Image (cartoon, rainbow, N blue to C red; front, side, top):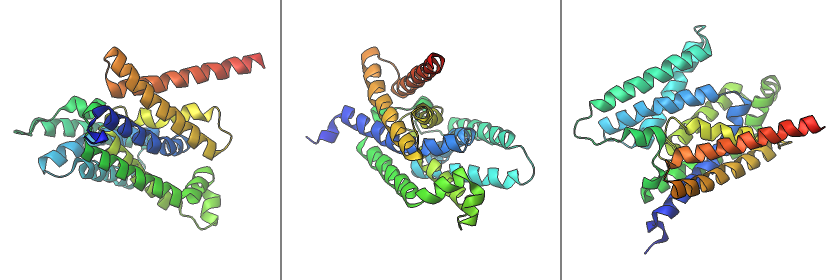
Length: 267
């Protein structure tokens, strides 16, 4: 029997894969204050799921396409002097609503909306693992290839432009990476919790890190601990797995924040 036949092994591998890719990307989301954009892309993923099922294509492809269209729409409409938060709010909730309505018309197709909204990591199969880890490899490869331009355009766009880097191009690369992460994470934590899994470990690591590299490594560690601990909590208390992982990540953040406050008062 293959060791991948054990659903707990598949679950752990899926969770660790998402943690490994979400942590470094989440650092850029925190640095660039893109949390609302990530939330919009995540909510739009439900429309991608519904369209993928309607046209019998890969859910992974459907989610990526819809997330990228969302990014292009935001970029185009922002030039018309709409407030960014207004644009993201309108597009995100419209995409979510249209996705839910479209899903209700899919006759003959069994769709578990709760699984896509909150994740169903325990149902991850071998093919899902291939998709998840392929996405992990692509995103990590992109971020390694563009690590210097991404950091420079994040810290100082003007200096990056003077050095020959295009802030808009790097923004597009981050957008593509975010779309891929949303697509591979939807099975693990669901559309409504993806952004939490992106930003909470990164925000927790920020209290300790002195360099961007340290923050990415620490965020990965906190994300991995949230996955392993969340799975254990879910098994012990029979709670939803995806939300349990996010809850544990939130507990880490709260503890670190309280320790930071206590340390400042003592000093």
